[in-house]
Length: 268
Length: 263
Image (cartoon, rainbow over all chains, first blue to last red):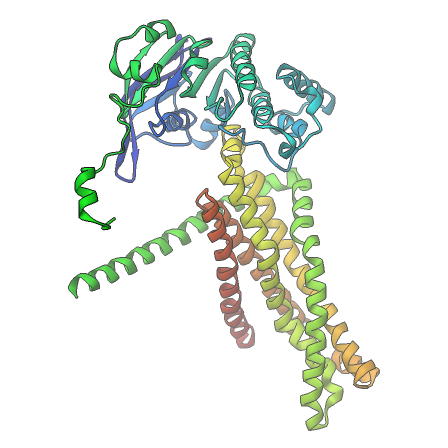
C-alpha cells in the first residue's frame, strides 16, 4: 500500500480551448491535511473534480488508493467515491430534506442498517459538528456556517478515507471560520482520514494544515509546510501570503493599453 | 455580403449541430432512465412522492379547466347543432371532442405549464446549487434518485389526469346542455353511450396521453438537467420546457391522430 492515498501525475486539463492545468504533480499522504491554494480561477476546484472523477484529464492521471480514476467504469468510479467525502463550497444540502435526513442520506443509500442504528450514526456525526440540536431544522433555516457544518457531517457520514473541502471558509464570520478549521483538523485525526482543502484563505489555513501546494497559471508554483512558505522569498508566495495587490499575479486582467483605449473613444 | 452569408450559414450550422447534440443527449438520458427502472421498484416511496407533486398538485388546474372547457363545448355545440335540429347529439359531440382530442391535448399543455416547469426549475436549481454534484460524489446516481422517479411519476400521472379532464369536461358539458339550455338528459347520456367506442375513442385517447406523458416529462427533465447552472440558465430552460412541450404535443397529436384514423 502506497504512503500516498491520492497521487496526481503530470496532469493537464482544459476545455473550450483553454488549458487550465499544465502538467501538475501532487501527492497527498495518508493521514495528512493538505491545502491547495491559489487565486480565484486558478483551477483549484477543478482539481477536486478531477480527483472525484467528475472530470477527466486531457493528459496524465489521478490515482486514488492506487486506482486510476478516469479509467474506472461507472461502478468502479462509484466504488472509489465511497472512499471519499466532499464538502461543497456552499454545502449543497438537499433543500427538501431536514438536517437529520441530509446526514442520513448517504447512510440510507449505501447500507441496510436498521433505523435505530441510522439514528445513532446521524446523532454521532451531528454531535461532532455541534449541531445535534438542529436536527429538525430545514437547510433554509440554517446560517452559512451551520449549513457548512451539516454538510461536513454528511460528508463524513460513512467515515471516508479522503475528505475534500471546496472553499470551506468562503463567506464565514471569524467565529464560524475558527470552528470549521478545528473541525477539519479534529475530524481528520479522529477518522484517520486524509483531507484536501481547496482555499485561498492563507492565515486560517496555515494554522492547521500539514502541507500546502500553491497553484497559479496552471502549474504548481510553490509547495511546502506552512512554516517554509511563510518564510519563503519566492515572489508569488510572498505576494499571496502577504496579500499584496500587484506582483507576479497582476491586478489587471490582460487588456490593451489604457491610454490608447481611452483615446479611441467608445469602441468597446 | 459574402461575409454576411457566411455568418448566417455558420449560425445555421451551429444551431443544427446543437439541435442534433441535444436530441442525442436527451436520448442518452432516456436510456439511463430506462436502465435505472429496477431501482424504482426498490423504492416505490420516491415515485409516490413525485406522483403527489406532479399529479395530485396539478388536479385543481386540470379540474377547473376541464369544467370550463366542457361548458364552452356544450354552448358552442348546442349553438351549432340546433341549426340542424340535432341538439340531442350534444352529448356525443362533447364526449368525442374531449376523449379523442381535448382531454389528452389540453391536459398535456396544462401539465407542461404547471408540472413541467416545476420539474425543470427544481432540477435546474438542484444543479445550480451543486446538489446533483453532491449526490454524484456520494456515489448516488442523480438519474436513479432524482430523474427516473419524476419521469415515471409523470408518465403515470398524465393518463389519469387526462381521464379526469375528460370526465369533468363531460360533466361541464352536461351542466350547460341539460339544466341551462334544456337538452333532454336521457338523450344526452344515451347518445353518448351509443356513439363513444371504447377501443377507437377511449383507448386511443389514453394512448395519446401516455405518449404526451413521456414526451412532456422527458422534455422537462432534460431541460432541467441540461440547464446552465445560473439564474438565467434555469429561467431559459423553464421557458424552453413550455415552448418545446407545447409544440411537441400539438405536432405529435396530428401524427397520432393520422395514424389512429389510418388504423
